[in-house]
Length: 192
Image 1 (cartoon, rainbow, N blue to C red):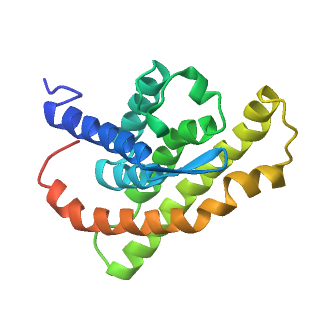
Image 2 (tube, rainbow, N blue to C red):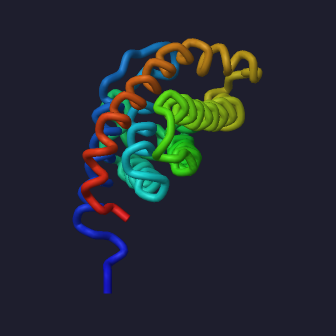
């Protein structure tokens, strides 16, 4: 009987949990939400691990942070961080990985490279929009009332989305390059 989780799969999931933690620690404070490399890790996981394992790695990352391990930006952890300004984005990583992985799995492996890369970029962009949606909704509905702030959706977008669009597009490009180069290498390992 084949195990649902091979040692190899667990190792790759753990590797991406570590990658997203390291990407969280690479942070530049920009207002209430820090600029991090986390979305790069989310898209790389979705592109290299597939839907199931990328989503599992994001859930494990979220749970490790929730119990207090310092895996979030600025070496923080705990439920307080999840209830803070960036909590919605962190929770959104799970759904972003889920959607991105699902869309990427529907792209044919064979065919023109430019078409595959364009569809992959669109899949990652869709995942980014999901992350933005979770983060913005969380900022308006959970964080702002707890912080006794009055915030409109446009105000939240101005603070939490607009400054990050260009850097996030660069992170998508990096994830596309990494995925394109490493996917053939990882194909040798049966992670299914």
